[in-house]
Figure 1 (cartoon, helix red, strand yellow):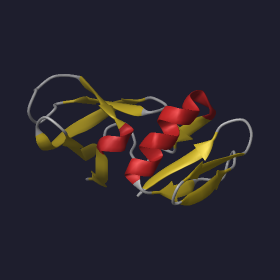
Figure 2 (cartoon, helix red, strand yellow; figure 1 turned 120 degrees about the vertical axis):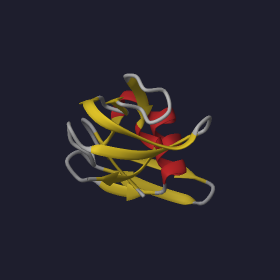
Figure 3 (cartoon, rainbow, N blue to C red; figure 1 turned 30 degrees about the vertical axis):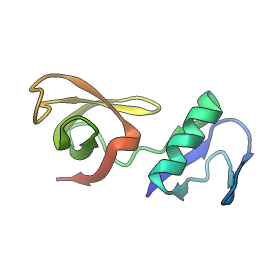
Figure 4 (cartoon, rainbow, N blue to C red; figure 1 turned 60 degrees about the horizontal axis):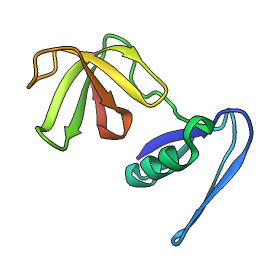
Length: 104
C-alpha cells in the first residue's frame, strides 16, 4: 500500500473499479498501481506521504534490477534520492511507487 493525499483542495479520482476521495492533510492508503495512476493523472495536485526519512535504508522494486536497497539522502514529492544503491553503487532517484517497505 502507498499513502497519498491531495495538496491544496479535495479531489475524487474515479476509475472503472471505483473511486477514491483525496483530501489535503488526510493521508489515504491505496494500492501502488492505483497511486501511480493517480500521480500521473493528477500531477501537482497530489503527493506521496513520505514513509521513510533521511538516513533510513529502503527496499524498492526496480523494473530493471529487481529488489534493491539504498539509503535515503533526500525526499521529493514523488521520489526518494538514495545513496549506496545496491546495484548501481551511486546516488540515484527512486520513484516512490517502487518503494516496498522501509527497512532499518
